[in-house]
Image (cartoon, rainbow, N blue to C red; front, side, top):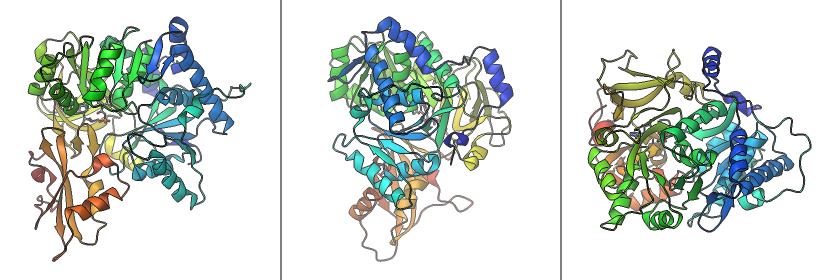
Length: 535
Ligand code: J2J
């Protein structure tokens, strides 16, 4: 890829024009919006990790330093830089600084490992990776270093920046001519990782016009303003914690973002008390862990909104969360590809606890179809397809995935099975495509199977999700071994650990079996193995 932005699938021109005419796409940059916030709230804390804080004036300066420092190290507008970062205080200066320059940041998840990073670097022709030396005991820099070494053997350079703070420190000079900086508001600005359905995650390019729309609508629907204090418990590199409304939505409204190093209640509950956090975004299993950890203790009084999304929340779980916290539960059904649905803060209890809400924008178009794409009768379960002012028209540099996921009318096939109630609220009923959803992390069984099948003794492998109280679904590997094989669970674990596969994709359990049930066409029957209903 000589021109990394060429992998972007733009909105068809007639629809783009329509969204501009409707005033949904406004041609602004994040900087335009942030500049206003900085003017009004210079001294207000924008970001804190508990130890260090940045006020809005400092945030603005650091964004500039990042843009200058990357320009000085010859990163050019249009080139991709991978951000492989946990919730550090440098995350937003780096992300927004690369955008100011017009370079294309790729938001890799902290849980990604060599397999993912290498694939990302290859498909984007990334020029470098920003990472940290270590985080919570994991040698992150080694991951990027190993990828860089492998690419180097092919004569490709992947630069490593392992000290984020050095990149946010003031640069020596100011570029006199910034005329080539920035990106057209309808062109690819940054890359997200799909939660969806192929082996190595697909990449999603997002443009500023549509993304700003999601942030502004999310802020309005979630009541975010300059008094909001948001706890980022989940990785902000994920679309949910970044944009629904997430840390970025809160920053663009002049609120305060508290970055948690890990989502556990022993870390997060004290941060909520200390900073008077008003809003938090969780995935269902995490919400249950928090509820358990609270026990009979009262939850922090400041918490007004507890968002839950990323995976299905059962009604009983929703009731338990609502009882444990003083604030209200808000369900969020979203995807990095675009569409986000919310229950509204003033919906009655039955809607808030029993549905996944409704689209955030009146221009979102939804279809519920059978497998041929024909609409099912109103109220029945079918596959959700959607298009609209902030849903992608295709995956990044991946025509095969685009052909599979975008139908001939431009609708994105979500792979989710839903029904739409007469009041317009959606209920998610399952997946049309089998993806394991472990605590909100999406794993395709085939990817893990391929790793297990590298072992000579493994004849067949099927990896599925199985219902689990803690994680929603745990990952179970069913294996058929060669006769007389002495391979045991320890060997399998060691192999997976050494494979470079992200840790969150490692099976929780291994079951050695003599046969794997198959479907009518002879494929291993994942649905049956997962103990779930066939989809
Ligand atoms: C059931 N399934 C859900 C929900 C997502 C906001 C919130 C979440 C994401 C996200 C996001 C669900 N109930 N409430 O990007 O901005 C499953 C669906 C969906 C897939 C998308 C956001 N909320 N899901 O989770 O790209 O299967 O985004 O298609 O990681 O998660 O995953 P992802």
